[in-house]
Image (cartoon, rainbow, N blue to C red):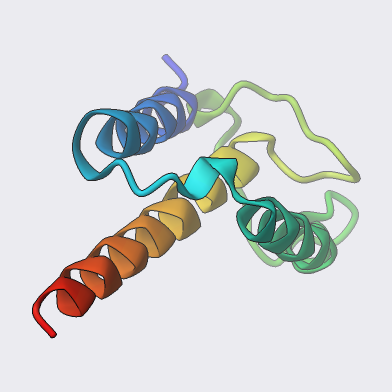
Amino acid sequence: MPEYTVLTVVGVLAVVAVEVLWLRTGLFRTAQYWISMAIIFFFQGWVDGWLTKLSDPIVIYNPEHHAGVRFPWDIPIEDFGFGWAMLTLTMLVWVALGRREGEGA
């Protein structure tokens, strides 16, 4: 069982559920969010590509724990889902807390 793959999918679905069912910040509907994601993934691609390149890896993944799909270069595809979930949850909480702080003023 590819644990990293399963946990990545669970993480992505959990973050979407937090936004859709609980926080409802509207972040997914903003251009700023999607532009920031494009910038983040551009740089993640360069850094993660360098760290996980199969020719001389710095970070080594056990092939039993991920799906085996590596794109682009040699980056396990799960890295992008995990990164998306982590960064998006951070942004969602930031927006929700900022909104709550604005209501108290």
